[in-house]
View 1 (tube, rainbow, N blue to C red):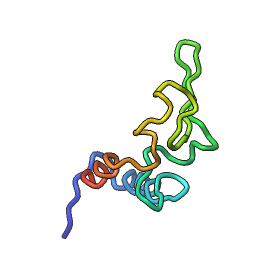
View 2: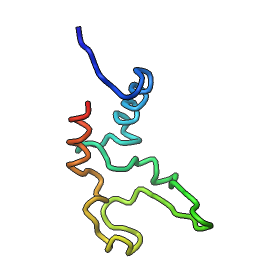
View 3: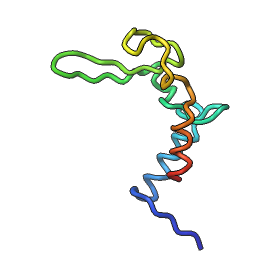
Length: 89
């Protein structure tokens, strides 16, 4: 008999893993994406003190100079994220 320890309920865990295993979300041919590809067409927008900030799926080259253009964490697959996901499961 298997026992799993999780911070979320079984139903919530199944839902989360559904997103991880979805090729339209986080799953890619090379591993798990850092940011869901859903954000290519649906950027996340947050308003802080009257200023809107957008998070979009931009693999590799950044559209702004905020992170110096090309930034390692922006690549579609980032090894530490995949490692942490495997370790946590």
